[in-house]
Image (tube, rainbow, N blue to C red; front, side):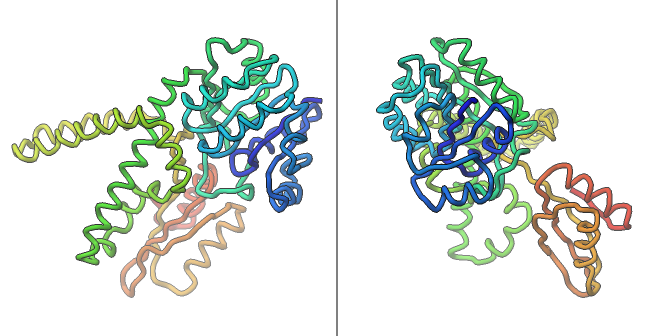
Length: 363
């Protein structure tokens, strides 16, 4: 039997556990320092067994997944370094910064133990083991950051295990990973937070900012509501990359200031044109660093029971609706429903069904 220990059985760790659990050659062990969490893991059937003993979980393990916040990785690596890990054991993590983690992980590389950084680029609007799913990583990129000294057979063993996630495996060096992810995820989070806080400041003197900043503004800044502690650790760990990216961002913003001061409509138009062309090349249905919104909008008349009818139609077709929001509903004015789903498949089925039923549906 191959023993897999998962430290931190939340959304990511729990989803990994579900991908591995049930395979006859694999045993999945969950670890938490809280007994209540251990009981929850077992009650939900996410792992084969769980324990509050770090030693019991780690010793004898063939693979150890550290699914803990980036800020706690050094603490766990230190604890693992005190144990007699199984020769050939592979330790990996799931954090979104890799260079600092790799430096920390090198301390484990003795007696045949290998540390290989990992980053599954998948997430959910929900968190915790309750949100874990076997489908979380399907069609997503799972980045591995082996070192030059990583034994090829160790990397191959980890890849063979991760096949169970149905993710697309990509290998890249840790520094390149941090530069790319910094640009496509960490920087956008900073921009979203800064923009929301800017508007919040304006709103202190004029409450119309909050009233009118619904719809699109809320959608494009939704990542500003991400976990503050998690993002504190991520940004600090990727500090050097982000300082450079912020300088580049300030330069891009300054270009717009120059265009506006010069009333240069042609350059403004060109900026939107080139951005639109690049954005149109981005894959629409590939899971990325920032999880997708599976939303559609339905025009509905202000009739009693209309919302219930739509929900019943979806329920009868066994389409899982995760959220419903009434954007506007007044007498003599068509209301707009925003329907949210957890998967692209559910969204596609819902749009097809409601369209056939006579509703006007759009994304």
